[in-house]
Image 1 (cartoon, rainbow, N blue to C red):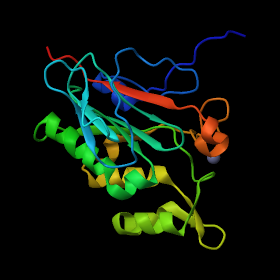
Image 2: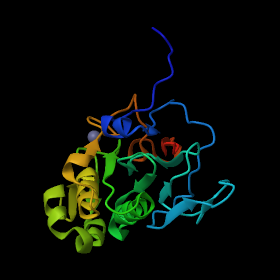
Image 3: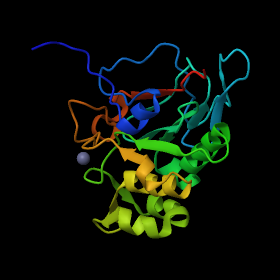
Length: 228
Ligand SMILES: [Zn+2]
């Protein structure tokens, strides 16, 4: 048995675009020099500050976009949905953190819109949904469902399965895919990391629902290609 350090998870859609990226797992290495916002379960989008690239504006955000090569941007999760995205040419990237609150507020749409703005008109975008708590393990109550209802009316029906009274199991990944589609990421340009329920995956993932306040976090990063 080797004690190899586990590798962050990569996806062909992002690899083909040439962007540095990885969805974190337990014990995977976080690249040096990444920038990540202070996440607040909102829908604000941060950008690398012009000039020195030493900070993010605003500091509090749940999506971060960049076209600065050499400074990967990142979000951290432990059950919420991480999304890494890029322009097809690889020169612009986005990392998005979406729990139910962020989904309800439109953080995915806001992040993808900002990525589109950085990418330029007509540029196709790619996005991959990373490890998050699966419908197998994610029971929510009526207030959560009603918060999501106005943005996801029809999608919420297909993404939820009633459980006990006033509760349902919820497929956050399906809602994320719907939001990506609405934001203009075509079906063929959307990917997922398969078999990656964070709560079921005891060995591979941190999970807030499983481990509570003691849960660690996975860091998911993406870095733009350098322009020639
Ligand atoms: Zn599960």
